[in-house]
Amino acid sequence: MSRLEKDWETLNAYVDGELAPSEAAAVARDIAQNPGTAETAATLSSLKSALLEQADPPGDFELLPPAATDRKPQVWRAAHTAATAAVLVICMAAGAIWHWGTSRHDTANIQVTAWYQEATDIHRDWVASRSGERPPALNIPATAALTAPELRIPDLSDSGLTPILLQAEAQLGSMTGYRVGYGGSRGCRISFFVLQGDGEIPVHLTARKDGAPQALAWRHDHAHYLLLAEGMAEARFDLIARTLQNVTADWRPLSPEIRTALQKNRDKSAPCTA
Amino acid sequence: MDQRERLESYRDRLYGYAISLSQDPDLSRDLVQECALKALSAKKIPQDEPAFRAWLFRILRNAFLDHLRAANKLADFTLEESEDLDPDVWSAEERMVDAVTVRVALAALPTGQRDIIALIDIAGLRYAEAAVLLDIPVGTVMSRVSRARQALLLRISGSNVTPLKSAQGGRRR
Image (tube, rainbow over all chains, first blue to last red; front, side, top):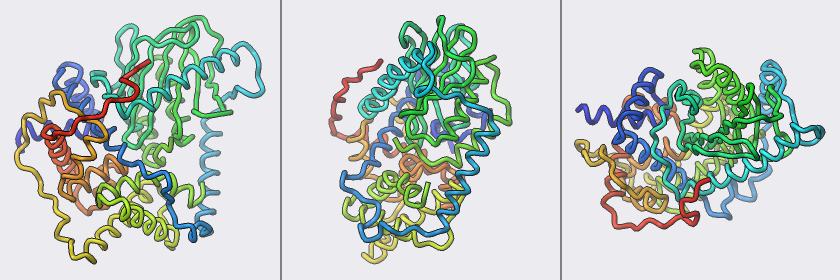
């Protein structure tokens, strides 16, 4: 195999999130330093998005013929119950998430609700337009964190998500900052807002539970964070949010334990349905 | 999530995989429904999500192979791997990679190359899952994926398909 072929294979595997961390780091460095590699990676990323568009059945398509719609083997119900219990245990063990949107009416609630509405529009516009829009050049190092003074991109490759969009000037209300759009190979899209200013967002994870998309917000000092996704398995979304909450506290690389947890969590999750 | 819901979460990807293999909407519909019925009536269903995913797409793939066999067209299922890597793929100048162009180019690939691309990019399988499904080493999956994408990009760059302009006009916020 020639060097060219080996590099091509490696870049494809990188875009698919299939490389070991050390290999992924090497490719990410190459992407950051070599515009040609960055453009090729962007082309591959664009190709993957366009291929995903092929999974678009006709509007009248039914998974099952009408006569078969009532079949429900009991074994699946048992599995469902067990899976639900497992998710509940995981959520309880992981710690509390505060909720807003229906019962609290303090300043923070009002602010996060306003953010949520703005952020939802931005996120949905991005997801809806991705089929006709080439992703920007993938010149964002996807490993660890990009440690430029004002711009940090957390690494979510262990969860199968790579940064495919960087909105350098994002705004929600009076807060300004940036947004990173992550994409996965199974239809998942996440918007991660990083905003600066004097806000009232609680430090702890606060969830929006009374509507789609899923959202979790938190704060460290004057830095405010908001994470949005749609149709993602709840346990996976929660784990990603908790990971980002920890990462944004000190911007240290992820521990091996967390990386393993993200990988296992991703492997066990169903594709995003939105 | 009950059995129907679990299957429904793969509905679009099952159809996308079926249409990638068969290039026939009616046959794709039949293949997916046959796959769903078999999955629902199976006595042993993998609980682990990766195993379930690979199991589900293997049912669909076997249904397609059965169809080819019945039509005496099994020989059409070829890989026809491309030869040496074209440096133009690596340089990746401006390419029009949109859904319509990709659909046309994908249809022109040999079935075996459509298979591996669809398993990874449409079905969403990991390399290891595809390796189990196809009964080949992970390294072979990695090689086949990259070569199939190379072939796809070459067809895209050599096509005369004019990509549709996005209704959004590339608007970003």
